Image 1 (cartoon, rainbow, N blue to C red):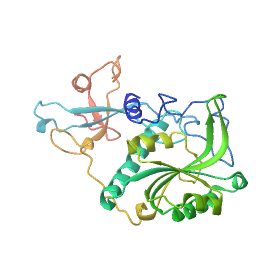
Image 2: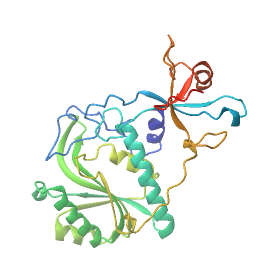
Image 3: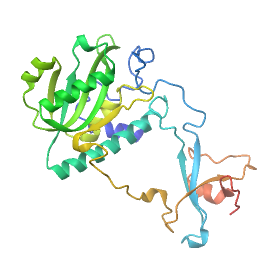
Amino acid sequence: MLSIQLSLKTYPALKRSEKSLIHEGLNQKEIQYDGWHLPGQKVERDFCQTWSYMGCLNKSNHPNGCIFLKPFQKSCFRADCRLCCFKWLGRSASKATKRMKLYEKQSKKIAKHIIISVPDWDYKKPKKEMIKKVYQVLKEVKADSGLIVFHPFRYHDDTMMWYYAPHFHVIGFGWVENVVETYNKYGYVIKNLGKRETLFGTIYYQLSHCGIKKHNHSLVYFGDCSYSKLVIEEEEQESKKCPFCKEYLQELECNTNYNLKPDPNIMEAWYMAKSYEWFVKNLYLKI
């Protein structure tokens, strides 16, 4: 939770609330339209946020002659999960930020935050039809690439209630011109908020109260930012390797014949590594 709070503090637009909109409001659990609902409103799975351990058994290749042990909390990473939605949120915002920054660097263009509001006569149309209009609007205003986040609902500060009012948040690249002419043509209201201080904070905040529906994406890319046009090479994650011998970490479990079970909340990792017998999970290879 600490890392989430630190991330949110970098986003200057959070004047109304110091926290994410997930779990906020009087009707956030009940509000839905055509299968769309808010993140984090479903029951967690049995393993969500339970402790497990990654480690390396190559004691002979470690300078201290001990195993390396790294506790971690399991997660389903579902947007729907009331516990794991924050990890989904952080992971999704990080991936999107990486893609936007790469395109920003390659194109030498500046990312702008654009809001496109759907007119009430299109409220009853499915999202796939509304977003077709949004693509047309973006083309008209010359925002040719970026990402789109769908928001089916808005939040009313006075009543603390969510209500159906579909709109789209865009992190877009382009000039954003012909706004009045495009509004007169389509009826979709376009608001250009310009450059934000932090891309991650903007994307994180918008995903925190985006629309969630089965078999639908909360965030989509378009133009030169799409998957087919902007390829990002996967980096090798050092966090998945042993800091001593650089072998990939394996999931471990310990001998259960102890009165006091290992607990990362009250025990340091080095203490648990020395005080318990550890095995590769499911293979039961004794150290």
